[in-house]
Image (cartoon, rainbow, N blue to C red; front, side, top):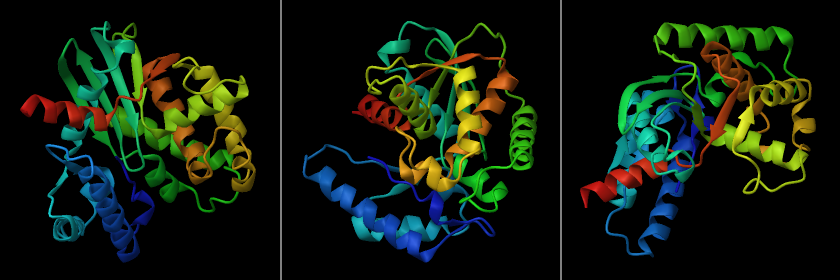
Length: 276
């Protein structure tokens, strides 16, 4: 089970607002209550980029503990990337692929992972989440994205990826992708083809991402909300997500990616099963 509090983070001082704190803790408590109804052996709660970077993360952790009696584990960037990599290994679509690169984009961060057989050879977590970059570069979310704003976002992403030192070679290694943005891309493309997301191909082409980016960037927020397959709650950050993804694909030299739903949650579950 998953909740997001990225929208409740103040970009000025990166502090979880009190409203977001209350809503976040309440939501976790509701999910814990639901989980306990199934009488699980273990319940594990983890937090990622938004809480990790917040200056008042300890207050949030303590509030969750007081309300639920459970410890909220704030994952480091490397831990987050590692769990995502573990989750991917449970996807039958890529079970036979020994070497590949993984990209996961969330609200606060973007993870890049290189996997070889069952080992994570390289991993990094970058502050390139869709919500974070939208807050940083998009002055008015209700309007279309200007070419100037798109260039600023793309340049920032390219510099950040370059500075990370992550290696994308050899280019023959496939790239697998996870995260809500990729699920939305697949959903929109499926709707355009008259398909359901579950039956649509998990392979996404860079050219389709570029065309979708052009379309969404030229639309206002209200217009984006009418796009079939695009959840209204994500309509404000999807242009930034597409710009970011396009930049990473350009830097990596990949023309296609394969979308997987086996992400952080699956990796966390796999780790718990290994411990039992």
